[in-house]
Image (cartoon, rainbow, N blue to C red):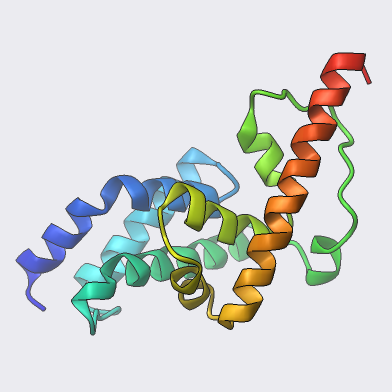
Length: 164
């Protein structure tokens, strides 16, 4: 694939790529910008090669996700698997209209599948490919994530209505 084709793909998906980078970086704008820039460099320098142009968005999201994981690891912001499966409790006041804060409360895999499907119009199969997990596993994370998100939104609404 030549440089102009890559440029076209990156420009076509830039908005979604930035939003995805931001979501992968726990909604930290500056880190997301750095991750996106590093991802683009990997692509333009030829360190990541697109084999199937029909899967360009999935390929781009995978590169962004793994670049973000590397950056989070460097910044020592990675949560261990044991910590990521603790029961979710709303410890601090969460604004019911700030859905970013509510989405952050989901376990990582559920959050990622939910964000890809709802915000980036991907299929569960594409999400599974990006996350490198089985389709059944992705479906499970999607289903559990929807249920947990509904539960969290309801809890926040109840807290707002009754003042905790």
